[in-house]
Structure formats: C-alpha cells, structure tokens
Length: 123
Image (cartoon, rainbow, N blue to C red):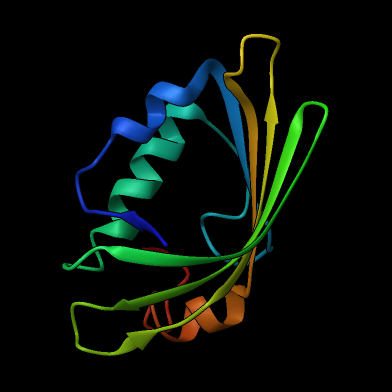
C-alpha cells in the first residue's frame, strides 16, 4: 500500500530538476505534459481533495533498465464523502543517478471527471 497525504511534498526529492509529467487524456486541465513545478502544484491540488490521504494498492510492479511500471488502484474518500476508486498505470523513467526524468500517469479520466472533478474540467 502506498499513501499520498495532503501537503506531503517529500516525494519530489526523487525527481530530476528537469523532470516532466504526462497525464493522459484530452479534456481535463491536467492532460498533457507538465514540468516538475506544475506537477507539484497539480499533486497538491488533487491530493487536497482527499482529507484522509489517497491510498494506492500496488497490484504489479515491473522494472527494466531505466524504467518502472506500476499498476495500482486507488482507495480514498473525497472531501464530499464520496468513495474514489480509480485504476492507474504509472510509468517512471530514470536518469543514470536514479532521479526520475519522466513520470507518466494513465488513469480513467472520465471516472475522475465524474467524481474528483465533480463534472468540471479543472480541479
């Protein structure tokens, strides 16, 4: 189990200063590539929707050369009391020193739109 708590920015120490983040999708404001600072802003805003932290069950972890792929499922409660259970694939690409150069997140954006985004395209 992995947990991401509101206001916890310690994870960003693992990212290269020029790291980028890709969010799949087309309609939500999060879709597309973002730099490390924007990822921190997005993460803070998204995780802030879950007052008791966002928990992820790690289903599979696959590693090779400079990348790690993780299949996971979230289990969290939104501030409005609604349960949030999305499915994810996280892809991490590393430099020679082990810092994250690129982080890609694949999820169900329609489910997020209907629940976490409350029918809006922005957080």
